[in-house]
Image 1 (spheres, rainbow over the protein chains, first blue to last red):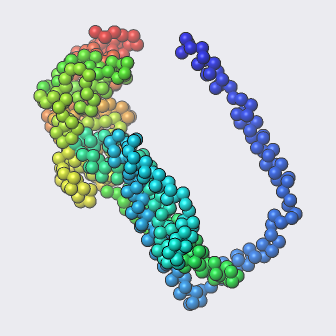
Image 2: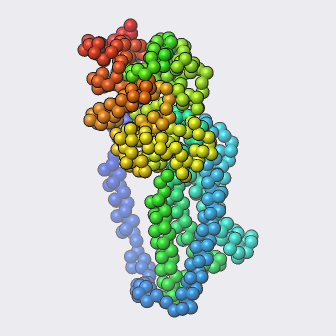
Image 3: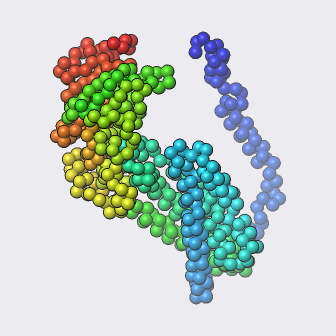
Length: 276
Length: 247
């Protein structure tokens, strides 16, 4: 290196931070920007909604007195069931589409890592397209195409979720450490055996807990999907809020929370048992 | 000869990692390659394992030329590996990790079934008893300490039952007390089952206590080759001193 003066000057420059790279100067600039923006807010006119506090108090009070009449509870059970059905069907379909796509996209099926494998790049492109569009947008599209049928909700959930699951699965498959796989090969295992005894066990528990997390997201998404008219919990929450019937709205929101908590309990019970 | 290297050289880019090495290890002997890091010990072991091919010269195990063997069942019957980082499948149970040593002998269907209902369990339990951790059989491999994980790797190679066992820095990741135990176990197991053992280590004194034969390696060449009690401090000094020449 001593014979190359060019590299020496580059090294010296890296050592000295320039003015805007210095942390203190940056902190000062950002703090000043924040102070300036706070001074420029018109605090008196319309930052806080005048009647908002009263409405908030009313909603909070309603939390203590959720509507537990038989009619509402019957609707709750029906809509919880429907929302769960959307979430489960959507996620199952997403797994069926996402797992194989993720596997191909990871490139682990090819001994060279699939650097130039056209199938791998096609799978990655497809996954990116699927998850680029939000489930709510898919729902509008499918409602426009097939009408207000449950299939529209299931497909709207399944498509973006398969894109997300596939992407995550692909990364999990790539992140498996090479050492243990080499050890299996040296014990005489074929590539298929290495896949099942090496990659799958490494990926399984993470993939499982991520899928359960996505199921949770799916329940919330299915709730929101019913705002576009597909029925379920969200529809009832929407109607109750429009009626200003906060007690009734809370019944359905508490139902939603209960569902999420139950799924969480179920998933951790299963995850604890997954050891081969 | 269990292991026969005949004038083997291997180059990585500009570096000559192994320079015209000939080495013969009779069946049942335990040999350790000692020397500074970068001496070529690991490359020598990889050449013996068939995972690296020599540029020139030949490697044979029990009379079989490795050049004609590709990784798989046949090679796994000849040579097994114990690595520094244990290389267990972290999420599988200890029992499944040990049984992985049988994968070369099992067909795909049998190995898949074994993930659900372990096959040839007595064999694995016997190996785990030998390495002293049979009570850990149903734990996840990742829950074990380093020393215990290396015992699992030894049990796996016992179940694989190759003619030659190669161990690359088998105790370098363990604390001294654990290293002593595990090394005693490894050489003991090899001795009583009549396996040929070739290991690499940089801790010479520890190595001298447990192996039949010490081979000093430096700059890709063999510097000395003798029994532990023949090794003199001068030989070690010249092996580890900073400037040196290949003989």
